[in-house]
Length: 142
Image (cartoon, rainbow, N blue to C red; front, side, top):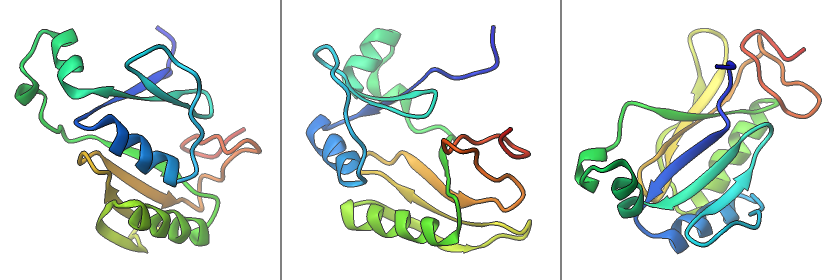
């Protein structure tokens, strides 16, 4: 198995509301088959899928899926971008969990939850500069 993630699928309770949220962040949808809303990312895709259909596909009741201890991370080019993304998410209907602040390790980050409770960390890590296409690697793209 190659060391990568190809697709992140978020189970959502209201497809229109979830899509409107990510659209409001400026993300562009790609054409997909019925039942899926997708946004191509740098080297990955974020998919929105009805929670009940995801549970059915897994063979589990929807309430068994819950929300695990998982966050989606978005690394920004600088602190100003962290602030701008946090403000855009707030304006789009996110619940700001932790406003952007300095972190003990020298970075700057904040957290918000999308309308379905999926948690996003928006961070600037001065020790891991992004590559020319915005690609992130722990010790800097290269």
